Structure formats: structure tokens, C-alpha cells
Image (cartoon, rainbow over all chains, first blue to last red; front, side, top):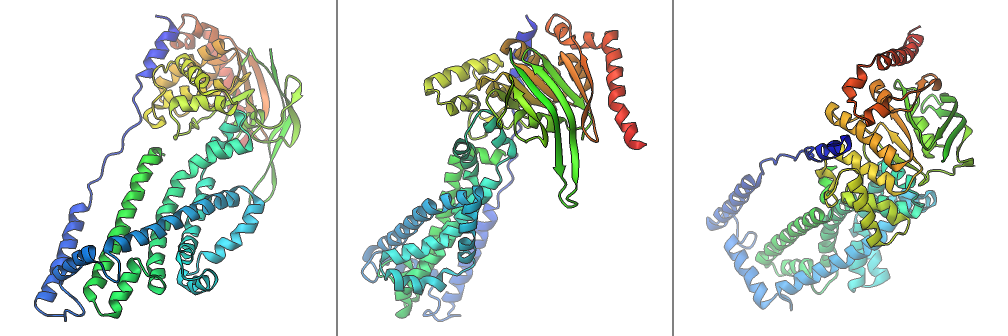
Length: 276
Length: 264
């Protein structure tokens, strides 16, 4: 066997990089917590500790949710309310990704881009969306556009800032390597900086979904004829507390599902991020 | 044959904080032919990596010029491919994807890219590993992918920045022999940065010793032990040769000399 062939075969059998050990989850503990809360709630309403007008039993809440699902409440079923809310959130997400990612790239890679966009982002970031909601309604009206606009504005800062930090976290060697293969500035941006920033952009998207979802419900409380926020607000006006609580639970459940969905997408799109 | 020339290069760093200028490299004159294996050795802080970064075009010299075949370079270029200490492989691409990237940047068609990436991976002893993710590869395998990727851009010079520094001793000695094989087969010039005197002696056709404060060339020695390593002698046998030992002592003294200078 020649020297070369020997080195080649031996090195291929090198051990692969080590795997991470999996920690034990907290799932069981969390389930117990939820069970205890529901049990306490049931006991409080069963023994009349609180008036049913303020706190209907879990059973009543579940029953009225089922009723809303089939017969609807204020002209729409639960599915229709939920769909209206989800459409708004995903429309806003699309808008804010289309604007936020290029804006983040501009801030992170260009002096002029940073000069122009930084003050805008810094102005927008600390503002509570409800503060500018009335202004948006004056400008855009009370239709879908105003809600999508407000939610987009709430989602933009986390997406822009996470894009910026993703770009800045690109290792100098990654960029230098591409340059030494003859990559142009644009090629470095497209083939190295942008793919490297995707994990950070996805994290930003997750934060944005959270911010967007809470803004959405608030926006629907003010002006809408459909949507989960609107459903709760209408129910509250008639003191239908079971639907108010049911609506809150649905909103929380959807936020939770969105978070899980975002994590699944992350794992599917950037499996390598866990190995950095 | 190509020549990579560093002509009276000096490099200053502005220290953050004190804002004082510090000279990192001074009066570097080095001409590397594309049939040479030049190893630059020196203590930490002697400017070894700065020298490689200048040759690669990542940094601009404060004085002097870098030329390839008489033409001054304009930043990094595909004629001088770099292999990094921390491999710098892109984790979102497979091993083959990494090797094919320089070809993609050159606008070569997909089928041709795949064919050449497969060939290059076979050349570095990684046949069939093309679909592997980067994190599934060992340190030695990663450096092989890095070398295949550097070769993909069709360079005239390979600039190797301590590529074996992070490997364990056994893998490292295998990779030394592998580097020599790649160098002879690919017919590119090599500029290798290292801390290890043994490595320098085993691989180099020429050893450049850098001394710190400021970084400058204090010795330029021709050697020939690589030929024996490519032949049928083992690294252990070569290291036992008296010629090897005396040159090892000489290099140790040269590198040790600056330490005394600093202490004085």
C-alpha cells in the first residue's frame, strides 16, 4: 500500500463530531401546574367562592366555546373569528419580512443605509403599537389595511434588528474565504452573509409573531367586525364572561401553536444552527 | 511557473485605546515560486498570520506591494486560495456544496460543478462523503474539505493559516503527509503558517523564520526533508536523522533568540 493510499483510508475513519446529550424535559412538571390551576378554578366556581358572572366554571367555558364553534357569536363562528385573526397576522408577517430583511441588510452593510434607517427604527421600536393605532386609523381607515399596517409596524423592529445582528455575527473567516475564491460583494452578501443570518432572522420572526399577536388582539378590540379580539370585546360588553375567558384561552393556545410552528420551521430550515 | 512577491512590505496597526501606531511587520521581502513549499515559522506575535493576510489580500500593507507574476494584487483573488485554521466551512452547505461554491461563483454549470466537486473530494480522500453535513465531519476531514474547496477555485498558490493547529497529534501527522501529497499533485505553490518546528522541517522546501517587535524575516533556509517523507521514510525515521536534529536546534535557537531579546 502506498503512503498516499494509507493516509487517505485512515483519515476517512476519523470519528464524527460529538453529539449533544439530551437534557430531561420539564413537560411533566408543566402539565401538573396546568392541572392544578384548572382544579383550583373548578373548585372556586363549584363552591360558589366567586359569582359565575365573574368566573364561570371550566365546564361552562368549554361548553360555550363549543357552542361558539358551531353556532357562532356576533355573526361569526369561532373558526371564522380565528381565521380572520390569523390572516391578518400572516399578511402582516409577509409585509414586515419583505420590508424588514432588506432594511436590516441595508443597515448592517451600508453606512448610508444605517444613517437613513437607524433613526426610524429607533423611533418605532420603543413605541407601544396602541399609541399609533388611532393615527393609523385616521390615515388608513378602519378596514383590514389599518390592522395589517399596525401589526406590521409592531413586527418590523424585531425583524430588522435580528437581521442586523445576524449579518454582524458572520465570522470574518466566512467572508474572507468567499473573497479568496473570487466572490464579488453581491455574491458574498447572497452566498455567505444572508444564509448565515437566517437563524437570527428566524429568531426575530418568532419574537415578531409574539409582538404581532398581542398587537392584533388589541387592534381588533378597537376596530373590527370579526376576529378573536373583537369577539372578546363584544362578549365583555354583554357580560358573557364564559366567552371572554374562552376567547382568552383560544388566543393563548394559538400563540403557543405559532411558537411551536416557528420552532419546527427553524429546525427544518436551519438544522446547522444547533451545531455552531 | 508563477511567482508571488511580497516587496518591502510593512504593516502598522493603530492600537485601539492608546491610538498609538504599532509596527507589526517591517521590510518583508519574500518571493515564492509556485513549485515551492514555503513555511513561515515564528513565535506568537511575530506577525505570521498578518503576513498571510497581506499575501491573501485581506489586509492592505502600510508600505510595499504584493504582486503575482509582476502584477500588483487588488484584494483577495482566486489565484491565492486560503485554508483557515478554523476551517471556515459553511455549515448550511454539505461537504460537496462547500467544494462546489467557488465553481458556482465562477458561473460554472450545475452538472459540471457536481462532477468536479466529486473529483476533488476523491482527491482529498473523501469519496462518498459529499452529502455529509459539516458538523458530521471530524476536524481532519473538515480540513480536507477546506483544502478541496481551496483547490476548486484553481489557485496558483495555497495559503495555509495553521490549518493543522487544532488537530490531535496523530491526525496532524497524517495530515502533514497529506498536505505534501496535495502540494505535489496540484502543482500549486504553498505558503504555510505554523508554530511547529517539526512540521516546518517535514514539509518545507524553504523555511522563513520571523522574529517579533516588529515582525521581520531573520532566516530563510532551504530544506529537503519533505522528499524523504514523500518517499518511503516515515516521519519518525526522518526526525532521527542528524541533519534534521541540527537544523531543529538551529531553528529553536533562532526562535528562542527573540525571547531573550524581550527579556533583556
